[in-house]
Length: 357
Image 1 (cartoon, rainbow, N blue to C red):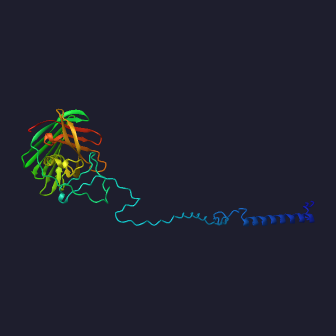
Image 2 (image 1 turned 45 degrees about the vertical axis):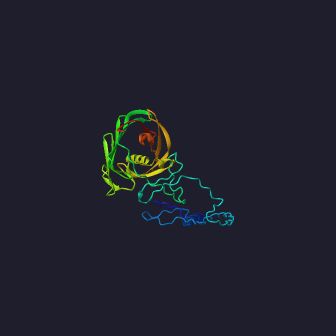
């Protein structure tokens, strides 16, 4: 058999050149890829399971300082004050406003005795507290007169609420020269209200010992112990010290009646003001009653002249107004009583007749 023919393995120079060019091209590609990898432009996969520890490319930043705050404008120049000429003490300067004349302040003498001051009156308006702090204190008025008690009597009054007539009211006053009992009864619609005061009588007037208010079916009581100087509110279960010049809510008006009977000329000038400390069944508060002038009252059976007294506001914003008219023809007993509530409701008692006089 003839031998199989083998391929010709002869390498020509052209083949060698081609192979050399291929290896150079491969080497060039490898070098370029490594260069790109080093520059971070080409991601080369890491070995599976190993963390990628290459750091991201850093970016250099330059921090600029904040802008400086604007410079504030310079304050305007103030003119230099002129020298003020000195004035003699007591000489008002041109810039001082001339003070308006005002009613004198109420003065209370030591020991709690009531004193009175006189002024324009007529309106029943109290002076603003502290309005004349730098002014000299008003001169004390005359001391309270001796008390002259009215005789016992039961007085009937026509009762009106906002001008609409209601059942009549009454004032029952009893005294034996040593002790007294006062009851004031009125009705508003179908509700009955009774106020009672009782106690002793002295040269200076009434010394209340017990005060009671009955409103509908509710009764409240306060007791007063002048010897111990204590006011006890039985309904509330507390007590407070008893101040000087003390009265209860209704004895204060019969106290005023006795002073007018003893010295009517004391209340000849509007503006005379009396000060009391008055208790009801809950607390004690200061009260001022001012004489504001004379009025004519229509009693239904004739016209009578009466002295008009007004309770001044007890505190700023006090809108409740209480007024009483005392007539000489009735022995200075009330010819009329009127209370105006903060909502404008008016309760009027106007004298009609009396018993026991």
